[in-house]
Image 1 (cartoon, helix red, strand yellow):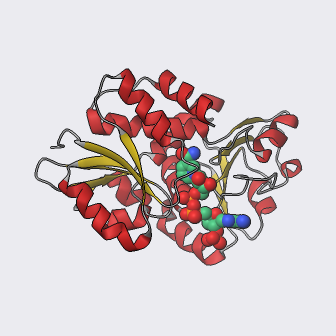
Image 2 (image 1 turned 180 degrees about the vertical axis):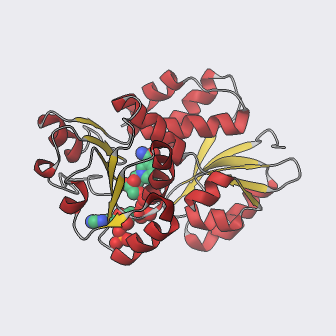
Length: 273
Ligand code: NAP
């Protein structure tokens, strides 16, 4: 059983870019919960002590880059989703003092995807660019869609191959260029950080088929160059803000067993970015 959180924290390094504190604090105020969600920007040398202090203070919270694997290793228990994704982005303390790790990125991705394209057609062809924690959450999520084919591209081929092996049930085809990954895809997911700043794109949108949907995990002020280019081609496209809100709302539900006011969370991220 989970304990009522006595402290809420976001663990990462660096954290200057994160919109989660504004978003979660808006949700806490709207729900009249007298807690503050703090950004805990912790250098690696202080990570172990910080995790111990979170455990002692019956904290709950989120984890972001680069500590999703470290916190997973420090947890006493993991949910099946955290195990399947292989990363922890949400945690809480149980009444017995155990630190429990979960992952809401996968369901956050699904909820955000539905917002832009509705329920996907049966058997979509999915291209995933990138092979890190975000890509892993996406691959776990798309199992639900029973994709006809999945193409995976990452600049580090070894990382892509080992991710494909972890999700062997999807029959993933690891390809050696982003263009090859997206050519026949009906859903294209960017899970690399390309586009966080500047106008770089992970793939040229001219290669995409005319009915492809683009789901970018990255978000930034004025949307990413990938999303803007896809829309200019007449494609449906969405940046990572909807996934950020959804994974955060699902985390809030895990901590407090009530739904937060998503509209308030959206207002907070729109204002902050
Ligand atoms: P990660 O674990 O560091 O993985 C990043 C992946 O992108 C790796 O495969 C990496 O390849 C590849 N990559 C990095 N820089 C690249 C470049 N310049 N060119 C080509 N490939 C590159 O990161 P992550 O946690 O998966 O996150 C990826 C992005 O998704 C981040 O921008 C993150 O903020 C975003 N994200 C958003 C949400 C949301 O809620 N919207 C949730 C999760 C993640 P190598 O292995 O070669 O380094």
